[in-house]
Length: 202
Ligand SMILES: [Zn+2]
Image (cartoon, rainbow, N blue to C red; front, side, top):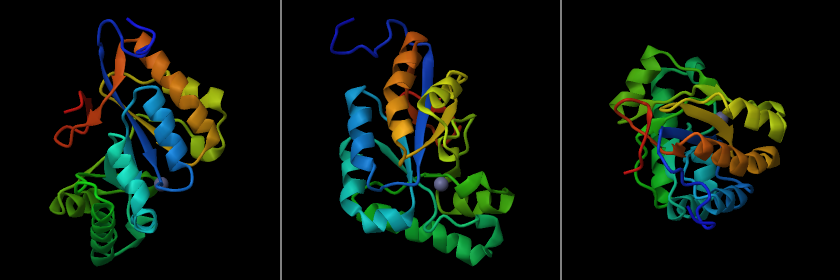
């Protein structure tokens, strides 16, 4: 172990997925620098509206080694929409993310976690798996850095942590979470679209 790679465990016990919703936005450059500084990769669920407004930031996410997922176009309550509008939310977001230079997303996180079998099937038709989470850090609800870190302690190998791109408390929590994971032999990984579980990056 060297000082330059403090977050590489001596024995890998498994992978967990760090996920950040709602970007890209004015916080994204800070989040990316934070992730880079602790050697972590994450899945970023972008809205199409934000990706369309900030294609340069989508490119920056890709260049930083992040995986980009679809989080709908305008963050609606998806289950209030008809099938055509659901498809429209998903497809426009795919285009916006591709427009920033990212690969076509294969993961969809529904806003507010609201989904049903019909939405799951529509996402699948469009090549995406619906991805939820095991741990909600509640950063969206004003959780402190300490509370976010404490929530993340409950993660197990293969599971997914929900966070957001946009909060200073979250930015501050990330290096602590990654360091604590490393002590448990857990590394940040990608979400496997086949299983919906966190796996080694490939
Ligand atoms: Zn969201």
